[in-house]
Amino acid sequence: MTTNSYLEYFLTLLGWVVNNGLWHMLIATGLFTLPLVVSRPHRSERPGPCTG
Image 1 (cartoon, rainbow, N blue to C red):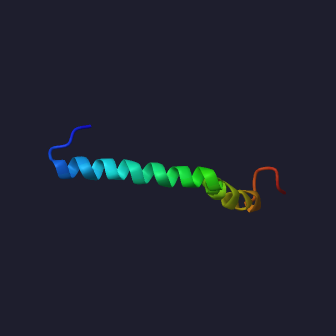
Image 2 (cartoon, one colour):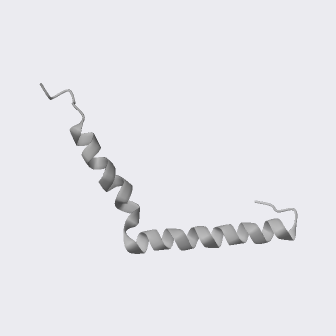
């Protein structure tokens, strides 16, 4: 990845730091599993090929 100015370099590094901080917070709190837990009941309520 290349940057053409000091501003782009700074903003790229800032974006990486913010992204890493958010990801570590999601991992530490367990919130990364929230979409899996929320979508699970929706899948079980849909009629499937086995329901009559």
